[in-house]
Image 1 (tube, rainbow, N blue to C red):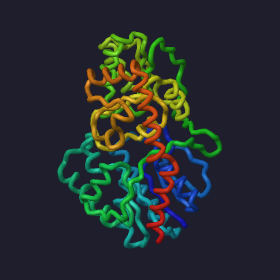
Image 2: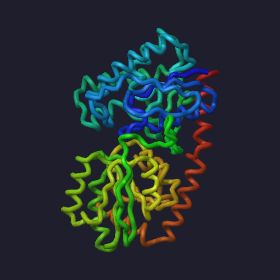
Image 3: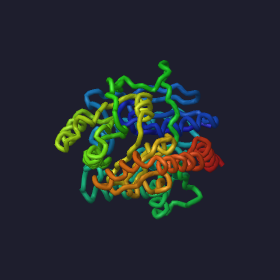
Image 4: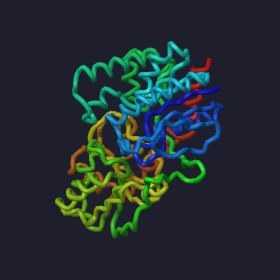
Amino acid sequence: MKALVIAPQPFFAARGTPFSVYYRSLVMSKLGVQVDLLCYGEGEDIDVPNIRVVRIPRFRFLGPIRIGPSPQKLFLDIFMLLWTIGLLLRRRYDYVHAHEESVFWCRFLNPVFRFRLAYDMHSSLPQQLTNFGFTRNRLVIGTFRWLERSALKTSEAVITICPDLRDYALEAGVDPQRLFLIENSIFDEVRLAGEGTEASPEDSEPTHIPSASGPRVVYAGTFEAYQGLDILVRAFALVLKRQPGAQLLLVGGRPDQIEELQRLARDVNAGERCVFTGRVSKSAAMRLLESADVLVSPRSEGTNTPLKVYEQLASGKPLVATNIWSHTQVLNEDVCFLVEPEPDSMAQGLLRAVTDPETAGQRVQAARKLYSTAYSRPVYEQKVHDFLVLLTH
């Protein structure tokens, strides 16, 4: 069986690494599918049998490709469309697996090339246009909404990554029999071609991290506004009044984002206890997470479940997360400390996580059990298998 997987993203670059695309392709290859994976020029190749990475040119003058909609991506997607047509002309695929906006052009190529189409929906693209401040033009948003709903209705199979998107797809008229909820919940080691490691040239190893005389709270992820890091820093300043030896370790972020948070940390008298590592390799991030006494997901808005939540569930560390739909699709009070997305409540949650070891231990055990039964690799592989069965029969 041959599949064309289209991922309009950098592939294994420091910015926007779509690990979900990798894991989908990895499991498909394990199940015997020969995958051609089309992606942007930025990034590094992977070393996995049955997966051939095909890249459009890398336009260095565009700079790094950031998360969310952008004029850069519109430019690059023109070339993704041309490369898609070229691949479809040269090879016969059993199905095309389109991630995000690539389904828009695949939906119109389908009647010409007559392939089976799978839509891997990681977000609602009309929502992204407003969430990332790309546009509020009603005509543009309306056009994207029509394209999205048309793709949902005409695809032979649809994958969503969280219950909110599943419900959205059902409301749009997708037949439940062809709708699959496959969370991005596995995080195995990634091996790059010829290197034997997942590090990217754009990643850096963290410099010496000061030791903490008190509990260490760790956040790892992007530094976009919706992640609620301003709330976390303000909450941590309140924690320091009760735990003066505590340390907040923030892993990730662009230099401009780090500078802004450093200023905030100084303003709330937490500057000396907040440590910023910048972007690091996946293996380095894992080591830093293992050093935590408490993990935190302070997201303040959004509906998609953060990918890091699944890793946090399996980590064996107490988790403090905000009580918003983005989290509560997966999390509850049995497996973490849920707090409101404001400094006082978050500070109370952090303090309870470090001062009530019995409750923290109970929630860690429940979190691991939840991950094992609902989100672990065997569960993930079975879901991908069921998806392939529908597409190929």
